[in-house]
Image (tube, rainbow, N blue to C red; front, side, top):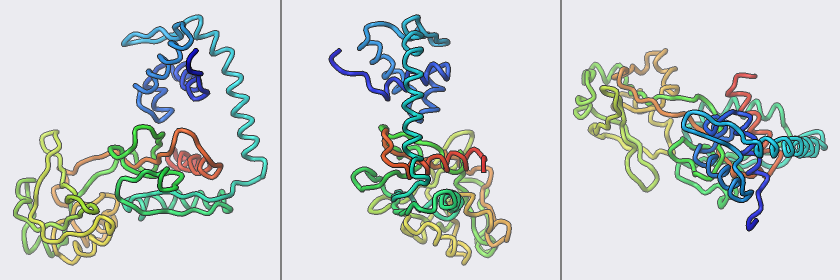
Length: 303
């Protein structure tokens, strides 16, 4: 064989068998289904035999695939056990963990996760680098990053961190609504004052709403522009009656309860995928492994 088959490739193959399909394996591994299919095809090409028989509706292992799985599954289990034993040999996780994060996760999503992680692993020093731009976490000496789906690098593994789904909500102060009225349709936003955010050195963040089952973009009358690096500061200006603001719904719930802000066009709020923790294919530290485990337990509600 010109190229050797890596342990990562074999793990992908075993995961497909365990999960019973490419899509389920991809979800478990945090990669695209096409990557899983490509990996299995590469193994088959290098071995010169088919391992899986698949159609658009079903999949089953060939005799060769079953024989390979029977030989390598115990070996992989032994490798994982050896790694786990080595990782826990000191009795505790220690070291440094540096994570690049957007400001959107700092107020409410990260604090409970960080508190749980610190409680479990007090010897780990954590550094959070707040950056709303697109960052090469390897080049910037970070162990992992947090971003929303569209911004993830394709060669990274990712897992949910926080809510699976969020909403971008619109809100304004009661004083603003009393003075300017409340828009009844997305089109009426063009006549209203807006508090907007600008990406570093880039465009204004768009206002995306739902109408007729489709996503639409509206352009309100921009009255105040803030840097996206100061996301939460916009709420103070909205409370002061300077205009309508588009913000994560979970950031607005306290204001809605206190009636310092009121919902605007609630039936048109746009949903989006929640944030994800991403990291290189090969984990490099016990601290990162431990942080991933904490994130998974918090998301699944184990704690």
